[in-house]
Image (cartoon, rainbow, N blue to C red; front, side, top):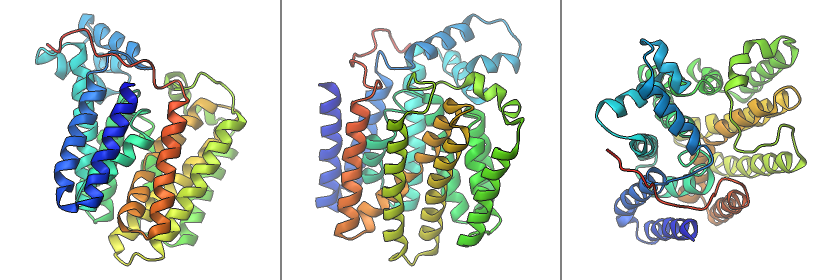
Length: 350
């Protein structure tokens, strides 16, 4: 029931922003606060116990810095745990601060690119919120920094892109895959033939490298799946194919109408990451399906810009396809294991 109320409330706020654009900022702000509180004050989720354990181990540890930071798996997330503890916040404070950071960064990126953030936040709630902000909070913060970095890259602010990319990698090592996909845009290799060559070369290199798993052994050991399956299922393949087909359609519809070079560049980059995510899933499918699925999820997060662009800039076909996709993703999440029975946190924030 709590999930239905939250999703319905999010849809209502998004609808008001569509019908009355002058209220978009107010609706976006309310939706941002709602998303932060719903995730930050939860008392359970798929990965909840793991983060509680890391918080407690960090609090009890006598290891010196910087070794101690790796109790949080990634150094910047370890630093965030220490920061939360240093100001007197208890374990629930970690979830709340992470939600503020992740959704706040995303809202900033959306506002910079779209001029508003109500619609993109609604799309995020339909597509990645329950996977990231609600479950994999390290990835959520990493994606937030990566969003800021991508917008900066498309605007030509390379220094900010470097900083945000470093922060994203520091929160989750899988963000290296994002940087790899952004390099052709940094190097101005943005024509379709160059992107095909770059992407194909990266995938072929992965396939041809027989010792691939030795390069990512640490990553494999650390990866957590939101599904317990250790093999690729036909269901997963169909979902990925469906996502790729819809995002391909939306990207085509946007790029066939959009003339602004910055918008075209960002939509192209997001579509390229969607394709590369599916490709990397295929590369890792047999040797390390968990790694492939995690990278695909990470790359798929960037589709929020394409979907939001279709809702905000597109014609009736674009809007209908994008909205239908959002509803489909909510149904998909609702049938997964992510939506454990909702309960508020029992412990104090400080």
